[in-house]
Length: 179
Figure 1 (cartoon, rainbow, N blue to C red):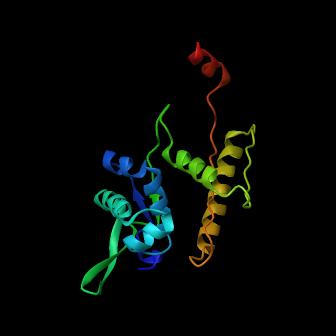
Figure 2: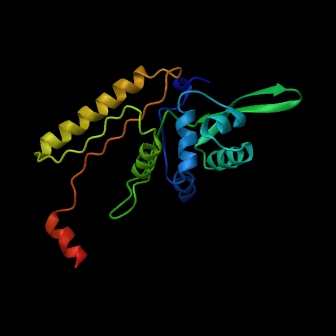
Figure 3: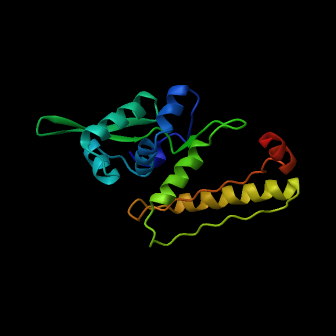
């Protein structure tokens, strides 16, 4: 099943779904499944897990509705299942004030695990923007991410793009909270 046949978005709404996504291994499995279906064996090989561990994590994701079986075939009397993400993109709820942002934690873990000698483009910029400029930058970043997602080819090596545009807690409030 090509990814174009999947629903556009899946909104994470339950604690079970959040728990399933909060694990870095399961996050990596879902990242692997974003472009093409894979069997438990293929997932285990690509993510670097034992087949039993791969099966365990996929079952939890499936139970939470985040991945699904999209194809089966018989191989020497055994039914081989191909899993895919349940939608082209997964939308997480706002973590709320002071809550951990699961997506950003996973992105940082993936960045830290990436080969140090590989090409990286990491930048943090502190900006002072009007409300309109802030909104426009958010729209442009989203459009750029969408444009390159459309260009993605599953036969090419993986690349991850993560951005966070936010207004930090005002300095006076942060200092008051620390006292």
